Length: 282
Image (cartoon, rainbow, N blue to C red; front, top):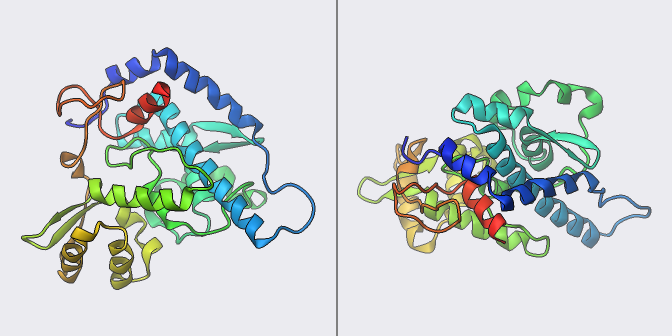
């Protein structure tokens, strides 16, 4: 289908020496230590710093491991992608984590429950249901809704992957959210209809408990020139639509070297291969 990542493209990345170097570097994750270790009470500033460090670390880990898993597994269907997120595990700080566990138990432990995520991922992870596994080392202690716009599991409508830094993560998350809405959301001003990726329906409670709160929160993440049009869509009872077909517009194509390619010219959409090419190039 248009926009799909082909096996030939994945083969090209897997065979690249620069990609092999990236894959080898994932072994370093096993040596990660707990930032919170040590005696004495931490100040509020220290706690905030540790939270920023954990947030940047886990966002970078998730996106890097997602790239690695996509090259290894080559998922072509939703079922294959679900299995990749559930069963590809990595050793980090003495624990084994899958992408699903990082998403739910590390990055989203204090965000509202998402029924689609519960059904597709959490309910399938049996060992995490054991009482002694409820507390996950290094999990975030705060609720950060903007992580949705920073995580790319390899789907065409995922956000562009960037490297997050502890001292800049707040500003980076806001920029990533704005970029996500700029490239992944389409507004039809004539019909007052906004078309958004389905994931925003899955995490809608992260942005308020009702429609009015959701619109108010999302409005702050949309470029100023589109705010009025988005609010008009919100006023339309049928104006907020969620779709899986949004990869048909608004994307830039890239070849396996990270260079822009003509649409339909054998490139790949924003996703793990673009990020892999970028990391390899650096």
